[in-house]
Image (cartoon, rainbow over all chains, first blue to last red; front, side, top):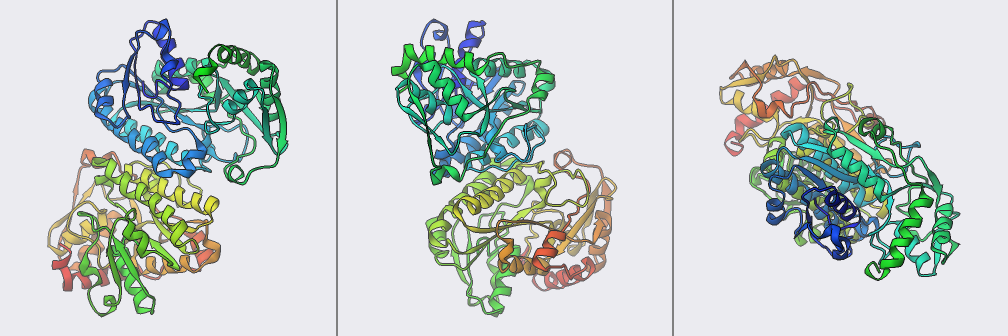
Length: 317
Length: 317
């Protein structure tokens, strides 16, 4: 697994280890990315092998040798950072991915490869819910580099026979997400501020809707994708049928935390440029082909998330 | 201008110089790419300033300082090479382009920027003729990296206000194209073989259709794009309404050359993987918005092309 010390990667690695799988995580541990060694602490993580390497490094190639399944989760995920340092975003999200795919041709040509992408590449939706046929029109560098990486996964399947699947995730939340700064999406910002008793700032009227996914539902989806032969060569939009306004999301977070507050502020110009209005995805293809369905409501997920951070907040700030 | 020692770049640079413009060409002169110092030989090229640099180099940044128009033509154009060395293709076609756009924000923020892309990013057409709304689904690395570069041009317009335009070219032919090897598309291969009295090999039955453009028509289109304010932020498919089968194209080339022959052979496997069947583009948007129309038939263009190479063949082999 790449990106295995990050938010989704560590939850997935722990779930796989609990199920008895032999798990190796490869993570570059770049500063400001989601990697956190504490994410694999505890008895479930004890047997997980850890390799510190970028996907493009020879050590990653060696670690992936003979893998049956490759969960390819490594990446720069900050939309804001991608605009201030586009070259680094391109390096990590596209160039390293090409190196990884080239390596897989030789060291694990039979592996199922599940690549996590982002709904961000659609930009401002032309219609809702957004299905897989929706035009791709990124409004930030991150959307361009992730889309290019998706295309490389598809191409390496079509031309070189790799067994790749692409899963485009919506806003994911849950335990083990980096809360430290404001660069990883709105959910960790909201959660941190509520836990610290600070106000959550909503831009505009907070009426824009989002579909959020609890990380356990994402883990379930990724495992299903890795074990579904018909998923090879396919792309899935993976979101939630529960659509909530940012205002409602913020209120639920403040309610679960029992601290913090919600305030409305005007749009700052640097965010206005890359905002996309309301977004929610159409996950019917994933439900149909993977037999997957999200099982956690936002209210349930945020209760569990708050409980986790109440016990471990020092590790995530 | 970037890529100014290449095929299209040099024809454009010479036309601009003849029209009295002050022209600087920036070209990395990578081996196997189209750069040829002989392309700017002669009185028309005498006043053209030449800088040997990749788009990402500081020398390119300096050369572009204060430019009013940037024709951005630099790139790796070989589909075959992009599959054998994807990392280099990504470096040259996307990474260097991001560096160039970043530089332009500071050294030429008001310049009109005309970027040449390729119809190759559409992959196998889902319908014909292919217009700008046709889904993008590259069948080779080159199509992915050029599409990412297109998206960066659009994004830098939308977010940073650069005045960028994207022109997707079909198969271009004419004087000053590299004929030396088999990596630059089918037209230079056909032309070289005919001029050398060798057989032109057609894969399959040669019935796949293409629209070809004589380079002078491309130069006209690029100049119009650079001087059309409404073209900013737009993408144009630029092809030809004259659709010819590969068989007819080969026969016309052999006829013009007065040498060579045509033979049919089965598909080699490495090309089969990236072939796209028939392709021709819908150029009506370019015609409408740029007031452009191609004026040279294939038969006329190939006569002029053969005449040029008869006089200068030693420089292009």
